[in-house]
Length: 327
Image (cartoon, rainbow, N blue to C red; front, side):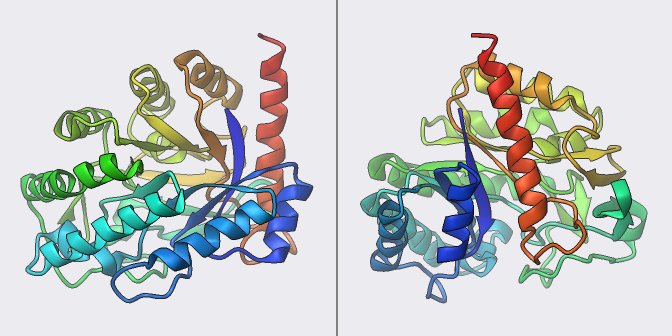
């Protein structure tokens, strides 16, 4: 196991220096600022990979292409085959460039939060309340597709199976693994569109559909903790999918409360015990990377959250050092 610094849209001298100062040598990018309205070119991906290499950093993963690249795939709209071909091109280009993991979600209307609430010491923490969401409230500003609704969960499953059937052979040939992120929030229906990755059983169903070594999880501990039953979901996901080598990497964050209402928080004050979770990851045979994810808004921080991310990374580093004593 190792720790990566993530959720960046671009590499800069400042962010790379920050990673090295924190003692982190792995990087993850989320929806990076790469030219292209429908696809990403090989040369642009290679430039990012070389920049990491030249600075002594390993580019572990790119998480998410823009929703406009595959909204028709998720919603089953005309034009999805063209989007699938573009997605396959991205996979091939990543493979050529030596970028090993592409993360994806299946939420056409993306992540929702309904308020900012005071957390420890007055830090601002994002929160979700299903009653507020039913009124259409979402504070997350993202280029998502809310124009088309798909209220039938079975259709969303058909759309995901159609997607996997097309892209997994390409991923296998290209040496790229596809990592699925849970729904956030984990709710069966949101804004008129069904969601499918909101409970543990559905990830097992997806694994059976995929039936490929190239398919696995971007295991967001926060999303699993948000689900009904909270910490129990986290442990079940680790035990089941970790033993099957299906956890490719981990978002290490937590929340207080579970659906239908929860609030994000600092590590160590949420639903699960971070040390217990890390120990279970080790016991499961997990050998991927852990990374920061959503972080509370602390005083005088940057928009990206340098201070809060440094706290999260340091917290994980401390747990990792303590875990060495158990070897």
